[in-house]
Length: 172
Image (cartoon, rainbow, N blue to C red; front, side):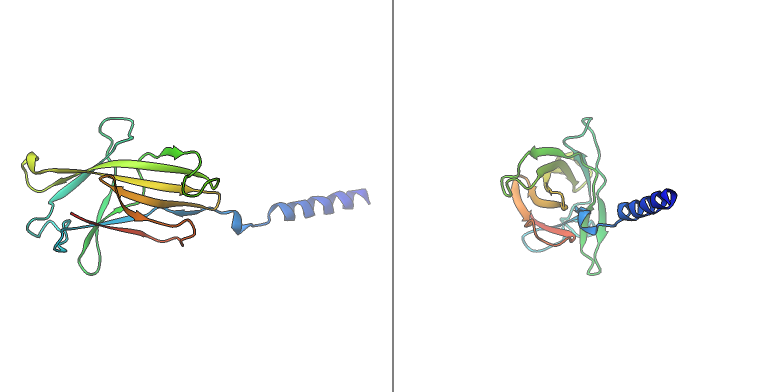
């Protein structure tokens, strides 16, 4: 009799421990698409257009070395607009232990990158900008909360916003 009791007890314990709780999963929302245009609306990432950049390179400011490249892909929409797609790769540092926007809800992190745009083979034509991405981290979500371009906020997202691809358009 005791043998059956322990067998049933182990089986019930195994079933309870295998319970799936989808609410305990953290949503990850960190994809960032960056579009560049001038004040006239011209796509500055289309190297075939006059006045646009012919290329770019990205360096992680928080990297372990002075030269810490970050991979950002150049993509194109169906409307032939080019954009930079950032998925991950730059080091994140803690921004604060309690977010000033959402006190008591978690921690904030940020990444800083230096983007060097080339217009021609002459190095003096290069344009150097900074991109800072701030992240919100709570038990339920890790997401992009703000994007600063050359220390100017160009994007923000509320904590309760749905998971999506974050789109930023920068006008130069």
